[in-house]
Length: 624
Image (cartoon, rainbow, N blue to C red; front, side, top):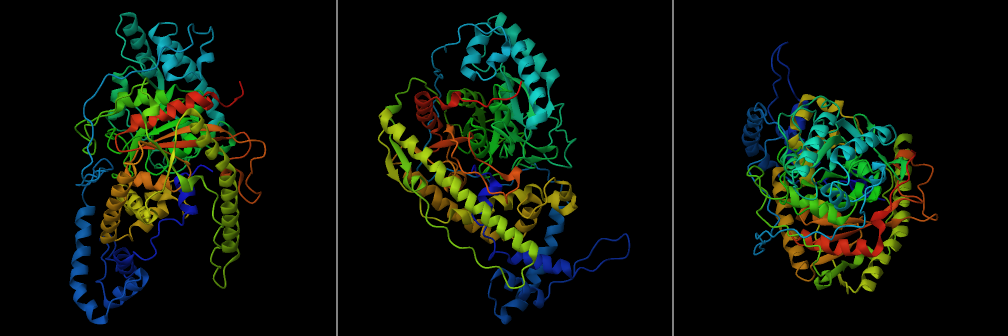
């Protein structure tokens, strides 16, 4: 089961906020005592009282002696009065905090010396077919070679992929906005440039799709969310500008789950081309689905906690989640300033390398981006790399722990939700155990290729307890949405969805946020030490490493690892059909990790694995 953010956190016990609620709880209790001014006046909050402090302390699990409470009151009231001044400021999503996250551990260095990329030799497609649609599932490297040799035109590819987007969108729901006028103008320009001998590289003339959290001037940027359907941002994101410079052709803005969660957006649910009864996972739902369905040559997604990994797995495509700080996020929706990453979703690893080559590096605006080099060399001897594997992620699961009993007097609705959760947990465990055979087979294949993977273990730190950092930052990024009440316009309103998460995050204390970041520093140091033992680490995709490496900013390459067989378990009848994942004939994946800014090494081993297995050549069979 591909772990999108919702699934992972529900399986893992959500965000662990039970004992860290004091300041937010206090504010809420004070708000409950709110006194209204006469009609037309501003609401006035009642002063914080000792009784409020006692209740908030009990809610937070904090013990306060009575003699400590009275001296706190002046400070608490003064602290609260300062909130209003900040809230009156115009703080759009594009305004970042006055701090910059750096994933490097003390003493870590990066290579800044850029080299000319080396791509593989010209592929086997020597002459373009008479029907351009026969190229729908060709790789970037193959398409780029055909365009360079003028065997197929950019206009022909643009028209072909646009037609496929229109044909399959009613089935898969992956398009928010077609950018046809912009695309055709770019395609004609690309063909003219190539005729004049001005070839810009492997992306020149290739149609691509953008996750609709990237700003594109002249078109809506909806963030997939109700209430933002008509939002326009009068600039192009840095990634869009750089792909324009590379000669790529933007043909569509593709779906994402609302505000980058899951695959539900304001127009419905994006679907998995391998089984349209399933969602495509998220939040890079449209990019993965459209790439898998052969409707774009490549796409750009984003990941904060699984949003490239999960849909790439579900849809059977290749995803590259770069090192944090490799690709500028200027002009992209902010969810978590210390975790957001932009990266390519493609059909093959070398495609991802070609796209990353075009979009990485400082832009002078996103201050998190380092001047580090991504030096792709298709001729690198991957056997020179030290390979490790996360031993625990390949082992059988430990027996499931029983869930705590429901409290006496639980309602029928609560009992039903408990049954459904138990069914989901059981289905997840059954599927995870089934999928483990594919993980083990990947290790065996690497050994047969000449690798000698050494067993490694993740650091023993409470990484799951650090994940409230994400929702605290997300709640700040969308504070105006919560405070204005416009969060009710979002498509999903379940307990695990953003509106509720944002409200819960307001109870997360600043002290605990800082403490979690300090714990995160320990995690970064421990993971840096782990990568001193191996250049590339192979791991199960759907495991605890997903949380760990997103928190520590390490890169990941997610590659298809075959299709589930006819004996694959399916979810029980108690799970709604659109919550199902897996089942016969659906893709699985394997993940390759590397040290900070060592993305090229992970790509090198992942590409060698793809060449040896050919799983990237599989694609879904869609109706004509």
